[in-house]
Length: 241
Image (cartoon, rainbow, N blue to C red):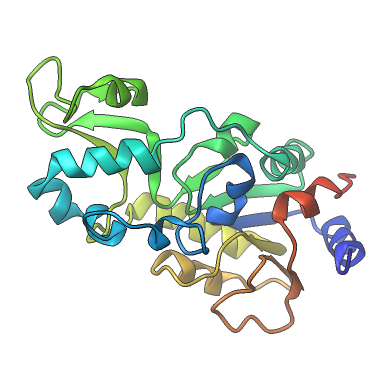
């Protein structure tokens, strides 16, 4: 595989790796991405996915929001793939500082990763919009229509960043600090077109940069090693030493 030997050499030289990942990391776990030919943006619904997954739509049409959310966003049966597992192995070996992810599926934590900065939140956390009581995602799945708090009766919302929402400032700060401290940045499974999350890679000042993405990226990353192969297939072959 072109680039694998070079990637191995870069990883061997590094002690403070940060992984910045997007939807492509989880496609091999059966979770569809948003912009590929078979992704959510290329399927037909009564409303465009970008509209449904917006804050104003959630507030105006919670029934339609949750119908789409349960059907196309929640993937509670998905399991970590080789990419998630290898990153957790790198962290356990003291080679990887953190994972910065745009995904909301929680698969990095399921694989064993400890330091994960979830830029867009997580489907595994939900809370009442009024009393803030926490709920497991299974409660969302089991609800007949719009999930309501069993204490106060208000609507429950997932702890995910919707369109029109801002990113959590503490998460951003943690992710930026990790990227700035990294001696190697691996960007995987993302086209780097969703801002402000994609802009975080500009904080990397190290010398070793690798991009693992089937379609490359929308950013001009000079001097980056580019491997256009499925990310799980690539990372599975890395030797941690």
